[in-house]
Image (cartoon, rainbow, N blue to C red; front, side, top):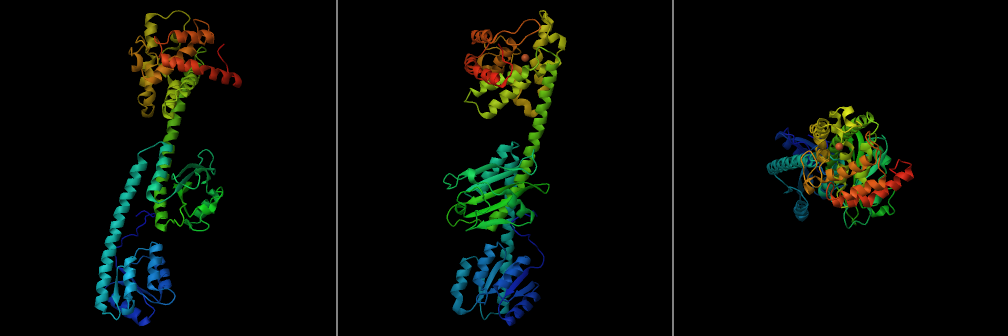
Length: 506
Ligand SMILES: [Fe+2]
């Protein structure tokens, strides 16, 4: 069973009963009879001693007197529930205190027996209590397994780190009654440096999300010492050094995110409503969620690293390709910059869509790897055959990227960046909006850079001539709406480049 699980293991071994009574004679009689019936029995002389015993090991049932010095049966019952110690409770009571026993049943006791009792009657109630308790535990375990499964399903559905982190916070709200959640993650590039990565609060929260930054080092020290962090009432906000009014925190719990036994962060939950408290059970539920969450964060990071490695490799290939040729050096990077300045002006696009267009810019000519270098930039006019060969580079690019699943989304940019708005481009003579948006963007960025760069067969055109040419070809070669976007935004990039001392087309 998972060590973070809430339900204790269901042991089908000998049932364990704890007899609690301040009268030695009653303890001895019950212990003798219950042992003869096959139970494993221990005794305690009051509620307090019973609690100590219960904390040492699992009991199926507690058979307790109602009135005892130090701690009576009712208080013992409350403390059992508070500590989430799972044991059925049967109370022994005299006629005068039956009402208290009935009250105890309302508070979760299984049953009561009246003193003086017949031992057979007690044995019968004890057996029923144990049976019911075992069913309850089985039920809890089933529910818990289901929750494990649901958590794994939910978190396993994504490999994007931000999505996973957001999902973890949503799950905390769902699994606990938190008013706020914060997720602190170690910076993988700077071991030992922890940053508050994601914070969420409910809409009616009295505390602003940016104030929920727990004291990472204090918490790590607690985790290292295996001390559970669950604070209720006054002082619950003491791990929040950045909070202006720590007294607003009514309850706080925090659990580590561990990967291969090393903490990579911590998941904390907060309650702000007056008198609101997290229970130990909720802390354990949070710990269970954190163990799943840590795996999901680790997977997302590994996947992200893999993607970056792939991207860097492809970028390296694109640069290597350009390095062979003085005329195209820096081309893909500039096309990427032009594409970025255009997407910045297209506010209706999501950040993901913009990022894809920019990435496609880096790789748009990757298919030129398949074409002989001397054919790419000869000073004379290309022969028909050479031109056909040149036109095959979008197809080569597509074939290079197809085996790399996560780069599939940029293939439309690579494959269609030589299509023309009027349907006279290649490779498929797509027309108008049938040409994917990223290809229409790249076509403009690519052509502008080509016009403003020297080629073996001609000198670079000045910026003014190039933009006039683009405007002239709007609606024929290029998407007219996107030409407007380019013309509206290109000066911003030119100004920035000038400030940065970057080369700027004349
Ligand atoms: Fe191209």
